[in-house]
Image 1 (tube, chains in turn red, brown):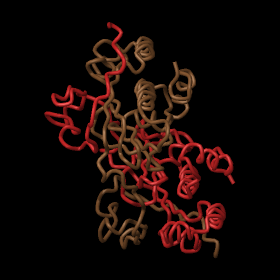
Image 2 (cartoon, rainbow over the protein chains, first blue to last red):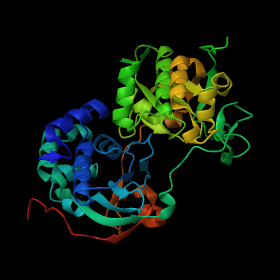
Image 3 (spheres, rainbow over the protein chains, first blue to last red):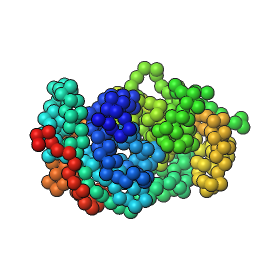
Image 4 (tube, helix red, strand yellow):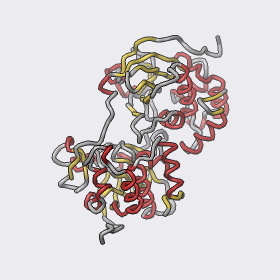
Length: 201
Length: 201
């Protein structure tokens, strides 16, 4: 049983290393991505969309060239445990989703997926056993076509200095940057010092 | 010159492997994170916020335990090249940002950061040289405190089956899931087949 180019055990190790712990969702995500690749052409450049921010983006980042930072993976949070790999030029792709109907046959996976019991009451050994046994059998696939507006690459363009914070920001965001417009999730309590110097000093 | 626990060269290798190419933004991100850790307590659990989706999230995922999928890294896109590492319990943290004023002294970095010339006219060797030479000297730091509402862990809770697509979704999203409410960026063109079977079949 392989997950893309890894054995199951190798993939588990990679999850531990990157994700920090062996989360059921990342393991299942591996089976989902493996299934998607089985239905994609061998050649092509494929971008990814994750429909949840939980676990699945890490499976995608471990098993595909797509990361959040290189822009080939986008998280469009619709609360569904589903991901799509699609040709970045024509938008044709394969969507894989965790199929609620199929999960019915795997009580411990169902219980985990629907949060039916508190975490400490979960039987994690049984859960792992069922996940490994089920593999991609709890998933279904769809052929999809990504809307053209999502195929455009997001470039950083048109920068200005925000008159409020003096940092660079996209001019399209308005007169001042979004942070200074109130979207910053923090208050600045203190500037400890000004580390570093320019090479002219 | 080290970037967290890596030598500069080791970090470059890790970028190549994870990000797919040695992007200037991920290198600079490494210096930013290293600088943040220098100003954080040695002990503690730190979550991360990236204020841009470009490059910086990958530096964070390479150098900290925080990933998008484990929920310890959140991308709150405000278009600024800045990141914060903060204590997940009390919200106290260090914000590091690329300082436009300091970038003035490094013409090739400035040109890259503000997109002043087409990519093919960039002198990538000179850019790399300046990035390595500048290190964290083009950054500044602030002490910040994250707003309490951002400290809450996002759990998957309260699931239902969407009557439209039959997939599980967060009940809080409404009568049908967000995908079926029109947020899906694709059209489903065909269901090729129903791969896999349940273990009862």
